[in-house]
Structures are given as structure tokens and as C-alpha cells.
Image (cartoon, rainbow, N blue to C red):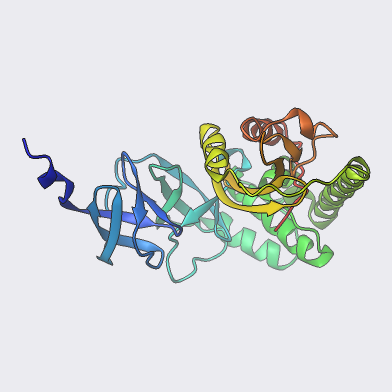
Amino acid sequence: MDYRKFLGKVESEVLPYFGGATVDAASRRLRVSTPPAPGWWRFDVQGRTATAREPAEPQGLDGLPLVRGHLWGSRLVREGAVAERVQLLPEEEPPRFSPMRARRWHDGTLVFEGLEFEGEAEGTARLMVEEGRTLAEVKAVPASLRAAFGYAVLEGVSGALGIRFAPAEVRGQVLSVAEQGRPAAEACLRRLAAGREAHVREMETRLRGQPRHPERQTQGVSRVERALESAGARLLATRRLGNERLEVTFGFMDERFISIVETETLQVVDAGICLAGSDRQVTLESLPSVIREAIQDDVLVITRHA
């Protein structure tokens, strides 16, 4: 049999493109030859290379897991106050706190499917946040809407105080913020800032006086990528540092993390999250599981932001 004729076979497939160098089909990841604008595209697929041919209508969503919740910015807030980024939102921005449904694509990404009918609760929540009030006395508000309201209050206070936050850092407090308003939001964010400052002081003390060595030329990017993928994370970028170290930026549980690791061993030097001085007990491969546990226990404090 002449297998060469199969090597040149071109197939057509409609897929969502979220950006980056790859696109995910049902059973495999494909390299994008020329990245198009994010959106739904009909791709010509040859081997493991996909070439965008033309925009297309969404296909293949019906059989995927359905996720419902309320919109906060570009995130869908669902049960458990989990706020996940949603890709390919409509060009016309939906109203704040819109009830929405999305589908979980094959790589775990949430893809917008459509808006749902609103009740009175969504309009009331919009009015309350605009007037600086809380949901303490408002009844029959779905938990996902209460959480989205809490995130919105935190977002406003964050801008005023200049203290950044990731949803996973404050997930355990958003319902209290929705009930108590700005004072609870300020207290939550100031605790985060204090934790970050303590971490920075600790890292400066620990690293002070350590000998510096010539920077190694190898980045070991493939090893970094394999270590993260085996833990369910995705490598976003690397940057060589002095003293035989790498800065690694990766995505995990819909958040972005920046860690510093030893180039040769991938032992963590600075996890980018507060580990109470235990950073060096962790490797890059085990770090995502530590992050997952911190999120589940509501103790995550991210100490490195881009």
C-alpha cells in the first residue's frame, strides 16, 4: 500500500480559534500555520497543521458539557463562585450580570453559546451595584448572580485601592462581599496585599547573599512544557534569568501564574504564590497540584503579576 497518498490528504473542519499557535479538535491539537483573528473558522487540516480558510458558524457544541451562570466581564460565574473566562463572546457586549450558557470545548475552554432570559434579579443586581448598595435584603437571587455581584464590587474597590486580584484568590469571600459591600471588599483586598508584601520580604531575605553563577544557555523549554502538561497546566512563556534560573508563565485553572525555577532541575525558587517559605519543597511539575489545593482551601495568594 502506498501511504504517501494519505500524507497529503486535506480535510475540512470547523473549529473555534482562541489565539496562539494551536487549535484543538476533538481528538488532537493542531498547529496553526497562519494565526487568524479569534473566532470560528473553517480550517483545512493536513496532518497536524491547520490553515484557516474562512469564517464559519459554530459547529459541534451540542454534545459538549453545558455550563450555566452569570456574566461578570469576560467571565462566567457558575456554582461555587467559580469565575471562568469565556471565549468568543458576541461582538455586542451583553448587559452586566446577563444569565448565560457556554459549552466546554475539548481542551477545557469555555465557549460562548448564548444568553438566557432574564428575571427581575439581574436588573435589581445591576441597579444595586450602580447605587453602591448590597444584596443583603434582596431575596430570590441565584448564587451565581450573588457571586458575580460580589466580584463586581471587588473589581470597583480594586481599582480605587490599586490592589489587583485574581478570582481564585477571593472566591471564598465574594458572597460575603455581596452581602456586606465595600467594607468587606476593602478588608479582603488589604489582606491580599499584606500577604504579598510579607512574601516579598521573605523572598528578599532568603535570596540575599546567594552566589550568582553564569547563566546557562539552554532554556529547557521542552522539559518545562512537558512538566506542566503532565500536571494539567499549559506553558505560556519562558524568560531566561541570571543565576541559572527561568521565569515560567503558565495557565492553570483559568488563572495565569508566574514562577521562577532552577533551569536544570525545575525546582521552584519562587512559586509566584504564597507558600510560607516552602517554595523549594516544590517542583514545577508538582506546583499545579499545590495551586489547586490552595484554591480549594481558599488560601491562594498570588504574589507575581505581569
